[in-house]
Length: 216
Image (cartoon, rainbow, N blue to C red; front, side, top):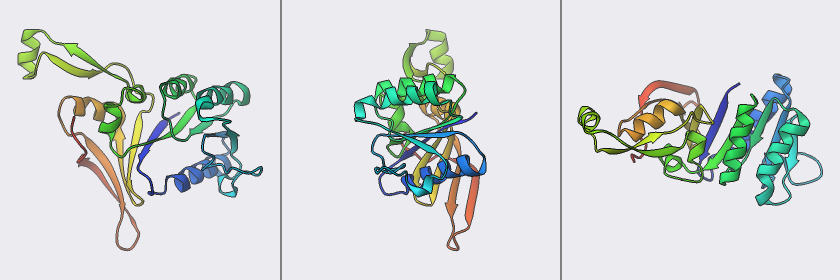
């Protein structure tokens, strides 16, 4: 089952999107969906869950430092097919995401920041995209690559095979994480899928567009 990480800046409609994903998976696809929501933005903060999440269940987090424990508890005690995690922000949460992904559970997460490059440079969260390590090349290989002897490489498969940059409410950039991370680390621009709405609010999909994000 696929894992998708949404990167967003404030004000692009992330909460609405997460609620709709939860509702569609629970009600239309009949999946067992659990929302782990530190701020209670998605599932609602009252005794009654937010109506827009449909049949998805929520697990409220007593305090932010406990979110990673609640994530693991959700999988161990409730047997979800889908876990939705809002605002992944700590190393413990990143490790919990990997643990959940390795159990074959569909995982949808969000993290602040607009560009993939931000997460590559973030030592706390870079494990979500496979982690980054410094590798020293031999002289011949460095010449063949036309690079310095010390380079950055991805060190493991990404927890989230797909990453979506929510640039604006109607402007999303979709990465195949492994390919995009490798190309960015090598100073190249990956090919991505761009989804926008035109002046008539029709979705326009541009496949294999050249990524215009920040370099490293």
